[in-house]
Image 1 (cartoon, rainbow, N blue to C red):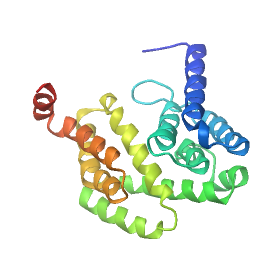
Image 2: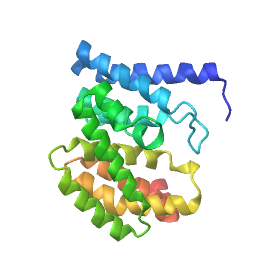
Image 3: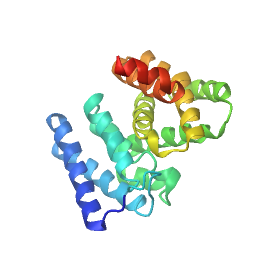
Image 4: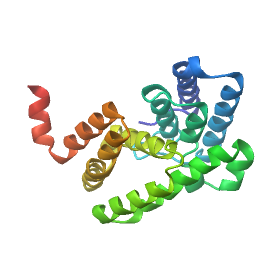
Length: 214
């Protein structure tokens, strides 16, 4: 569905306000300033990009930040990092720019997220899982990287309908094999269950429907 730029911009602004509202109790003035800067940077970095669904790409990092803020209840640094998680991979912004604008903590988290994204290039899921585990060992000083990556995967699973069927199966299998167990391991039990349910929807659609109806 094609919407006007004005309507889309209003919806982006609305989603940003919603992000602040659901995070409101834990945010200081400085926190809000950092999150606003991260939001503005994400909007600028992704301004020409769209998702397979046709909507502006920036809705994705905003949604990931909302999961991080509301469902997981994480700090402002995590929210800002979630907003920026695809910026280095998908735009002309480099890690040096992120560090200059947001400091070493955010830069380090975004760097970790970018490295994990690069693992997607392995087609063999078991090999990818092994590489993922090795990556975790190098990131154990900041679990926020893994938590944001799981939130990223959750939103991708929630919006998987726009993808081709073979990609849906690949992503769902990967989610079941790698991300759901990871969510369980770090105590994100509700998200683990949602990841499993969403994976099941694409891997076993008939059984999923029969269970859902009953």
